[in-house]
Amino acid sequence: MKNIITRFPPSPTGYLHVGGARTAIFNWLYARHMNGKFVLRIEDTDVKRSTQASVDAIFEALQWLGIDWDDGPYFQTQRFDIYREHIQKLVDSGHAYYCTCTPEQIDVMRREAMASGGKPRYDGTCREKGLGKTDDAVMRFKAPLAGTTVVEDVIKGNIVFQNDELDDFVICRSDQTPTYNFVVVVDDITMGINTVIRGDDHVMNTPKQILLYRALNCPLPVFGHVPMVLGKDKTRL
Ligand code: GLU
Ligand code: ZN
Image (cartoon, rainbow, N blue to C red):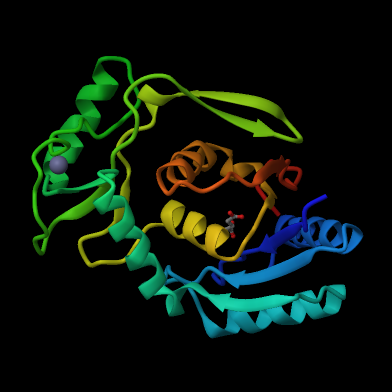
């Protein structure tokens, strides 16, 4: 049996909510039960909404729950060099490209896709242009155009996504900040995470993340998405 490594990656944009505490407990218990490791990572790349008070509240809540960690806390804002390195890997292997479409153009594409009954998506205008880096260029992932991506979820079973519904999503913004799905994958790879247990509000992100693991030539972790904890009004607690 391999050495299990789980993680808890809260975003410090408020208090630790009940659902977050619950996934922390699942990951911690599983790591302890399997004699593995539990990693704490603070996902603070949303600089506008992240606060030190929330970081402190997370530490306090974990302490109160009796949850300790074996590695970290890592802070995503201190890891930009690592993200840059991996973006370069994707560029070098032909899995990413620069896109200079304006927000207005993107808006038109989305509306056209929806008008023809599809999901709002980027239409691949810049995919084969071989554009270089410019101030207003974003970096997009070159996603497969056909086939399916299957999330083999240990809790929900297999979830099949059609690749033509996953568009060439942005992995790095024009201000050089990498996006959420990309940094999660790079972090999970470089931290050796092999078991990802998280709320099912993330299920839609998982196929994109799987494509990134493949493009980076890295083995997939085991995924398990647990139902969120909702209040009587069906919003999350
Ligand atoms: N930072 C994310 C959140 O707080 C967690 C992402 C994940 O588990 O992959 O919802
Ligand atoms: Zn474009």
